[in-house]
Image (cartoon, rainbow, N blue to C red; front, top):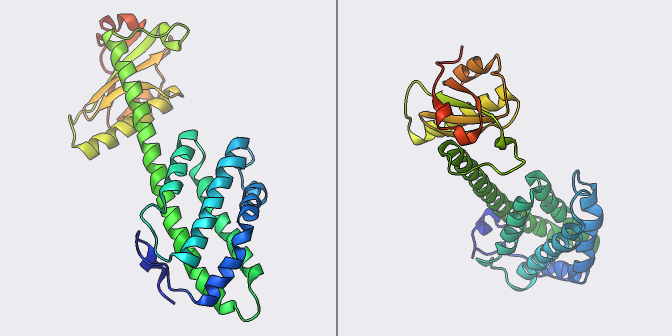
Length: 288
C-alpha cells in the first residue's frame, strides 16, 4: 500500500485505491447527512466540555464541518484522488473561529479524531464479505486525511491564539503606558480610578537579546502575579520596567524573594492615584 505520507502535501495524490475500495466508499455517500448528525449529537456529546458549547456551534457549525469533511473524503476517494490547495481552508477557518471563541484545543482536535472513528465504523458496516482488503486500503487513506486536517487545525488554532494573546498584551502595555504618562485616565468604576501601588522593576544585567528578553519578561510577570495573587499590569522589557497594582496594597513579604528568583529587583512608590503617577515615580530604595 502507498505510504500515506506521500499525500501530506497539497496536490499530492491520495494513495491509489482499488475499484472495490472506491465502491465501498460510494455506498456510504447517501449517509453523509446522517453521519454528520450522529457525530454532533451523539459521538461528540460524550466528550468532556462539548455539552457546554453554544447550541448554534454544535447544531450548525460543527455539523457543517463534519459534513464538509465527509464529502471531501468521498470526493477525493471516489472521483478526484488529488488533494487540492484549498482542501484545508474550511478547517482552518473553523479553527480560527474556535480559537477566538475560546474552545479548548484538546476538545477541537478530539472532535476531528472522533469524526474519523465514526466514518471508519460506517465503512466497516458497509463492507461486504471479501472487502476486508478494501478496508485496509481505506484505513491508510483515512489516517492520511486525519494527519493533514489535525496538523492544519492545530497550526491555525495556535497561530490565532498567539495573535490574540499579543493583542491583549499590547492593550495592557498601552494602558500602563498611558496611566504612567497621565495621558490615559482610568475609566470610572474601574479599580484603577483610585490609589495604586507603582513598582519599578530592574534587571541587574541590563538589556538582553530578544529571546532572553522575552524569557525574562515572562519570569518577572509570573513573579509579580504570584506575589500579589492577581494578574499585575506591567510595562516590561529586557531591562525591567514598571508595574501598577490597583488599591492600597501592602507589599507582599515574599515579593523581593520572588523577584530575585526571576532575576530582578523592585523599587516602590506609595499608593497614589494613577493621574499623579509621574510624581509617584520617586523611589524609596530597593525593597527589602
